[in-house]
Length: 377
Ligand SMILES: *Cc1c(COP(=O)(O)O)cnc(C)c1O
Image (cartoon, protein in one colour):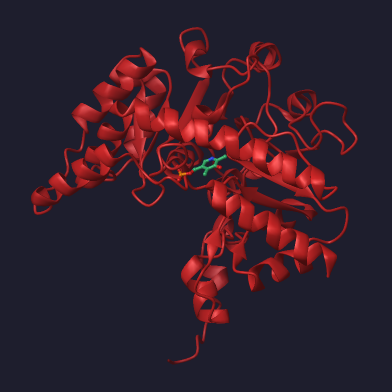
C-alpha cells in the first residue's frame, strides 16, 4: 500500500488522537494458535462459564427466521420487559449493543472539548475511552490507598466530589468496579448523589448487579424518581451469559433518555439480541443457577488462594483480583503456558495484580493447580 504522504493524526479529531485502544482479554483461539495448546480455559473477561439461558438460545434460534427484516427500532417487547423489571416507564430506557455503547451515548451527549468527566483511578477503562474520544478532559480521582481498612483501591467519593467543577458534565461510578471488584454502600452513594450539583450527570454502572449478595449494596434504579441526573447502566453480558450477543441498557429520566436515544442508531439492537435478551430476562431459574455457581466458585477460589498464601481485593462480582506483591506479568505468562488465560491489569495501574474470573468448579481447580505449579517454579 502507498505510504501516507500527509499527517493523518493532524487530520483526526483531538479526542481520537489521544486515544489508546482498549486491551481485551486474550481470546482462547489466539492462545491456541500461538502456543499450540488445545485444552485452554479462559478466566479473563468475566464471562458466565455456564453460558446463556437455554431459553435465550432457543429464542435466538427462532429469531433467525426473521433475519431478512430490520429489527424493531423501538424494541417494543424488550423495553416493556425491562420497564416492568425495574418498575419504570419504558421511556426511561435506552438500549445499547452492550452497555459499553450506553456509556458511549452518555459521553457523546454530555461531553465535548472544554468539558470534563470525573472518574476514579483504577475504574473500568471504557469511561476514559469514551470521554477521551469525545474530546473532554478526564479528571482522575485518587482511589482508596492500598492499606485502606475496608475497600483498598476502591472509589473515594470524597476525592471525586472535590474534582467536580462548573465544567463537569459526567461522573462515572462502577458499582462494583471492574477490575478491582470493590463496591460502594447504599448510604455513602446516596449521600454522594445528594451532594453532587443537581445538573451534573452521575452514571452508576451496575454490570455485575445480579451477582451481588451484599446487604448494603444499593439498587440505584430505585433512586431515579428523586434524582433526575442519575443514569444507571445494566448489561446482558455478565450474569446473563450473553457477552457475544451485545445487549445492554441505561435507565434515566425520560428527558435524558430522549437525548441518549437521539445518539442511538435506529437498528443498534439486532433481532437476535432483542429476542435473546427478552428470553434471558424471563429465565430466572438460569440466573439463580448462575449466581449459586458463582458463590460456590468464589468460596472455592478464596480457599485455594488462602492455601497458596495469596491475597485478593474485596469483590462482589464474578471475579477476584489477586495481589501477588510482585510484578504479575511473568505469572500471567507462565499461566498461559499452562493453558490458563487470566487478565493482567497493569494498564489499570495494578502491575502486581491479576484479575481472575470465577469459572466452573473444574476450571477453578485447574487454575489453582496451575497457579501452585507456577508459583513454586
Ligand atoms: C463488562 C463490563 C461492562 C460492559 O459490558 P458490555 O458487554 O458492553 O455490556 C460495563 N461495565 C463494567 C464495569 C464491566 O465490567
